[in-house]
Length: 181
Length: 457
Figure (cartoon, one colour):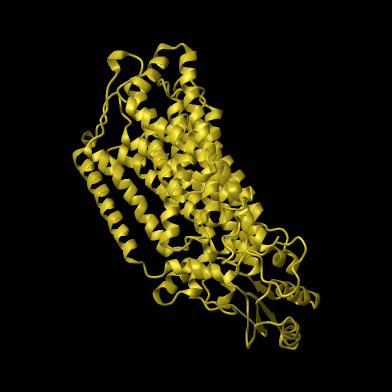
């Protein structure tokens, strides 16, 4: 396995929260204090956390979907047309370029390429598959709790810790090294 | 919305399941050591797979002549069963993609199992063209590549469209299924110990549930659902064109695509009911798969049964109205000819028996639904048999008419295909979380320290 990616000269602090609203507020407070290197963990895609707490809006995954779909449709048309013209052979009295029939192939290719490139888009943007060992993680985050992990230079880590402690975490853990998660 | 209201709407499983931890506990419990009942079913399925392989190997060894296929009936049980399994696949994508886009509140509990069913049904269906071609070592001829003279396949042929449709459907539904399980596999990883933990560690791809992962994941999921929705409608339309594009009386009709899609959803939802009833009982998932879920599926069956019955009657009407002797003869033969019994099984199981679903008491009785769903499954297999075999046996010229009788080998492969499907489904229930953990949590109100925000669910 590849070692976890360290963030040089940084330290980390991890807080585990029982409640959604404290997690959202903690994230807002961290952002207000100018912290950038932090991550929130959740057992479900909670929109309040993603949109209010972390202000995540657009995802570039949609560009991948569109590009894949268009590439697929173009490939489907190009493939069927080129192969028909490569050896022109009239079957059933139909034109060599039978566009309505080729729409079906182009459609299927659009869906196939679009779906696969959506997955690629997800993997690229979300950093999956992530084969590094789980650092700065708590198994409760896939169960019923939320987590926040902050990395900061030693000068600012105390401040981050204080912010997190202010929202009554279940667990607050300091780590001597900061990790890219 | 309060918990009571959510329960009322049928989106929440049960008042007992009020916390995120409850979902993990109840669903991951299923993944523990299998009981005796599971082993009995699994060995039956494995024996059935043995029957399947033996029959198939015998056919490969002796040749396609061991089947009952002949001229004029060149498509028989194999193609019938192929269409049957492709049809079964459709409900999974309907529930996981279409109902997702429509935000149907009852899909969360059932969608994982039906999506798994989709993948395994396509895996089963995909074997039948290979079995049907006889010389399976030439099956790669199905793939579009230029032959020795650099002649490419004829893309005007619906059989080539079918290859594209089925391979796309298998790939996309498998990807959609796997992607949806990743967060739940991470939950299984955090819960499991020993060798199992290693297994989940690898297949959960190191998912940690960070904001970045969830953000892109939920977007990707919407786009995949949006792609899968037109795909699922296209796949059975393309399968129907395998027939409708030919000029065989009984096949050559424009209503085939919507008629096949409705039939596919009908049979697929019926099989979801057939599988969900024992699953909820054996795995103690009564709190998740409630009567509300079964009632919603029964309503889907009601609707699609009505569409299918309407299509049957339209076909008879059009055959009469066309005034074409071969067309009229074909349908007369369906109802009163040699295969009259198949047609009447089809009409009874798909048109008459589901009429009982119009009674609310029946829709809410799980035992009744289980029995009706089995009738529907039988009826839908016979529907494809009627369309394929009776039409081919009775085309234009009387001297070209013929009969077909399935051989023992074909029956072995038909029965074996159910075992093959069951084999994978049983493995699924023990290895992957059979209820979507993360999605169930979305319908549970999140834990809050402060007052519940107005308008938040």
